[in-house]
Amino acid sequence: MLITNTLFYDGRGNLVSSIEDLDFNADGAVDSRSTTIYTNLAANRSQTVTFVDNNADGTMNEIVSSTSTFDNGRLVGTMTEIDTNADGIPDFRSVGAWTYDFDNHQSFYVVQSDYFSPGVLQHVFTATYTLNDDGNPVSGVSSAYDPNSGVNITTTMTFTHDKFGNLVQEMNETLLPGPSGPAISTATATYFYSHRGAAVRGVPVQSSHRFFQGLNATSAISRLFLCRPHAGYLLNQ
Image (cartoon, rainbow, N blue to C red; front, top):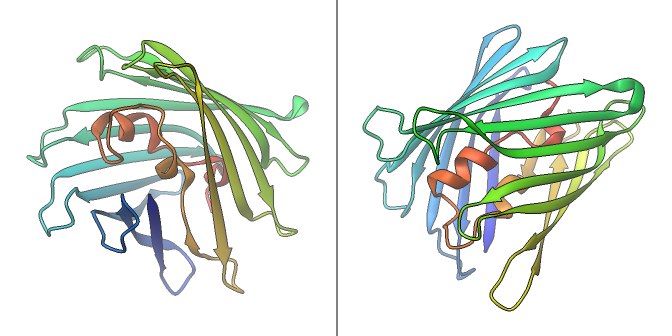
């Protein structure tokens, strides 16, 4: 699979929109396209709205809305709603929460979702990050529930930053269950920056790897659990 993200910034360097193109069989043709609009609602709140065109045919098939809350510039919570048929009515929702233990160089992330229990939130995803002296993540371990196998899927993460603290690479290794034994899936995301420090190209790793076998890259369940800001976006830039 080839994934290409194009990010657009305003004159003040604020991210205003992005386009993600998915090429499932790497034949050069776009198979799915998502367009995301970024809005600052308040000093400590921001919102993204993603319009998903599953077949890249110009028809909007799904809408994903996520509101993030920050405390002293640190991401502390998100509320995500998925409208699986773009009829304006959310079908599923998830709530993510971040906590920080700077004395021990750690941060923690928990996601609850009502995908498996309509109207009732249940824990479906957890992650623990190790932070450097600047508060940026350098490694992490996550656990997500896989509805196909009925077990938790573990992913190990490593992060590389440049001398300015910008995230330049994220690598994930996921242990997936299989009929003949566990299989290892790896994903690498590389980020490029302009001289002003704005990311001009990158592949968000949450779109590169999948915890759920048998589900395509734009399925609602993948978005509920994986459309989280990656560790490089924990700061409200």
